[in-house]
Length: 271
Image (cartoon, rainbow, N blue to C red; front, side):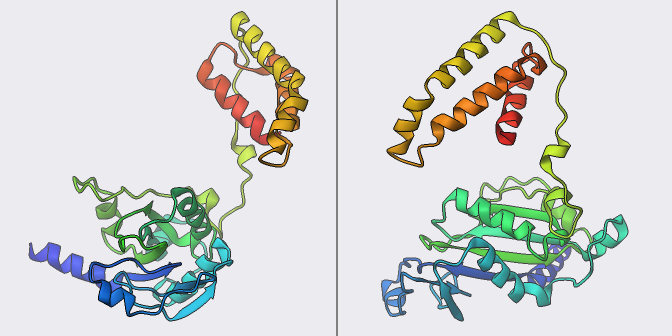
């Protein structure tokens, strides 16, 4: 027990965190939160506390996810190893960190994913060996904001953080792929994709041809419908994709649904 306490205390002492929010959470002690000045609708507050404590600066609410993450990372830099990107195992272990991206309450999951991408593409991206989140590890009730925490991976910290646990609120961390971290060799995802071997299946082939032909014929109708809620380019986009599928029909793995849908997804992203 003494060892667990000492290691936990050492880890806590090494953690650095910073939060940002559009609004303060509603605390049970309403007198506390209502006595604090509200965050203006056109601003975000950096350095907020989980109990509604005010931050140390405000930035425009129109700031991008990249701008906000870069600002937070700058404040965390004094607690992060300042070394150049390294691919050797020994050096990587010495300079690696764990990042925890925490939802303070009401940030949509999609937006949290965008923030995660920005963290991995930031100036500390190449140091991130363990990434926890995005998840609601520790909320400030209904606060519309998030927090970013970093800690050096010294000793057996990586092993312990990656270990399984029965705690229902703990979302297991992951080891991010090096190809998506800033400071590593840039890799085009399309270059990593290997086309499967083509195969034949008469029924699937006829069915796929009918779908593609229907999409091409419905180009104008789909464009008109999508123009009522968007740009009106849905019909053109689907028609072009359908034609691409028809042009490469002989190259598709028609006999294997799993490979077929993967290949179609790849064709769609390229198109």
